Length: 355
Image 1 (cartoon, helix red, strand yellow):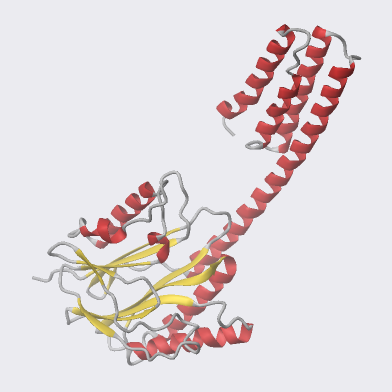
Image 2 (cartoon, rainbow, N blue to C red):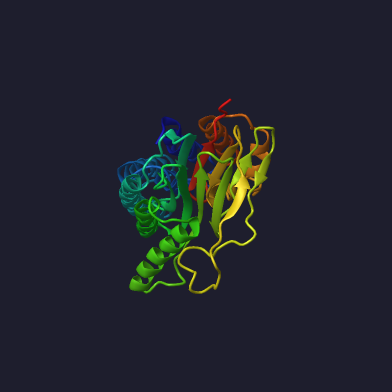
């Protein structure tokens, strides 16, 4: 609540009072005073709303005494109506304040749970340089289930990464994200092949969903990658997730569309499909950008979705953290005046030039 906001209802009361006192006998502007407590209730708490309502009632009393008397039937009913409306809007302001406190508490709990689940990635993993960011949507307590993690392979000659997005919002989505991240961290070092790792994640998610009776209602889109240290390639399994963007050292960006995507985690039993990994070039100086659909769904005032691939094309040559800083700033500028429709997570991985 700013002083400028608070000045509006008091200025309205003063204006209506003066004009009503000076108006001809058959003109009555007192009913406009109800706007003062009503406006106050939209941004202030119940105590300030009640105070503004009291001032408006006193102003109506002054008008009645200046024009006729307090016993005048017209002014009496205006005062009674103003008192009743002030009481109503004060009650609504109280309900809004209680709701806002509940939302803040829920969001605080969800954010704390999410911080515990979603550990920050190190700046370097093996030979790779890494940066990550999480942008929370501002809509009440609707924390999303975006997730990412990284682990070295058992041989120590490669890095595995996952980025995903749980269907749904709130603490339930955070719990599902914790399940996937826990399964990934437990198995990424052990499973021999990338398809085996994805099958393990699918089994973990499906078992949990079966136990909760929610099969078909909850699922997780994910991209699971393995990047060998010594080969200029990456291996990718896409489980219904937006395709990673490969920002080329030579300029431009390429979407890594897999020819045979796997179904989202939790839906494999409903969609018969073998899990296969596809290999793409990932040369020195290139940069890989992983992201969730919250990035693509950010819209400007005209409803235009954020053109991630188009923007990233012009930003080749930046290090991972520099690229994420640029994308975040541009994304928030694109959505200026709006909130993000969904939480957004991004991970940038760079393969440094060695010669």
